[in-house]
Length: 325
Image 1 (spheres, rainbow, N blue to C red):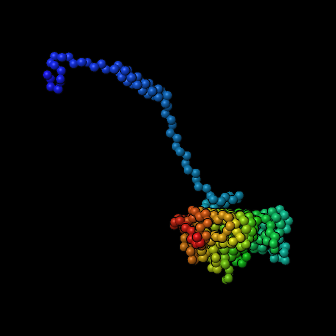
Image 2 (cartoon, rainbow, N blue to C red):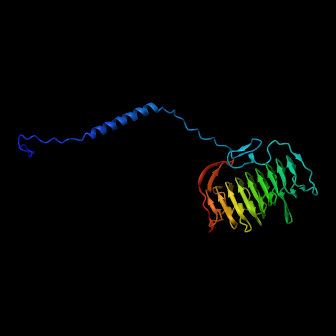
Image 3 (cartoon, rainbow, N blue to C red):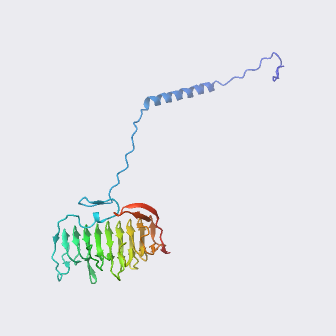
């Protein structure tokens, strides 16, 4: 016997019949693969490489009808009356002290008023103008709806004790307020302030604010404004919205600096939104924030540094809410 073989010598080992399907199946598979490869080679055409589109160029945050623009937050260069505009001076019609509008739908376009503007009619429009005093729409218990756009309120060499613009039912866009201890006053419903620049001053005894709610109402939006309170000495805050009569307060994407506590938002009914604001680091007296954190939608606020043109030069870090729970 052969080693490892239990059959007698000379026996012919049985031949195991191998199934004939396996090579046929393999042949079919091999043929199919060849056919697929060949077909793919015939049908596939090289696609040209398309480069992704370049990212869009950054566009200015504010572009005015005259073409002037701000690349970041509002500055004097892109707010207030357009530079070089020829203005028509209006004669003061209230005791040679103020100018009063009492016709509904009046449009003041390209005018210069050397004193306060008193609005005593609904749907008044002010644009491309200079108002040396303040703008008010309150007359006792009555107030009147108006819009103010691309207009300068106040003068750089004075410091008026009254709010630059007030009190309710108004929309302010690209307004430059200076020469006032208070920028905007909110004493009622439907106030929308955006893309505006406020440079504050103060007199002894003042409590200077960029925006203050006093007997506030429903529906305040304060969006994408710059409030500079660094040179005022008798101060409260750039954003001082703590009135218990306020309802639905939205404060978004503003650049602020100065104040005792710079951002103060609390006590409003309905929603309180404080999002995307930038506060210049170490510009406050006591602290950055004194707000109502427990019921405020607070997100995306940051501490920053800026240059002399109000351009953000660095992000110092997140600005956390602090104050009442």
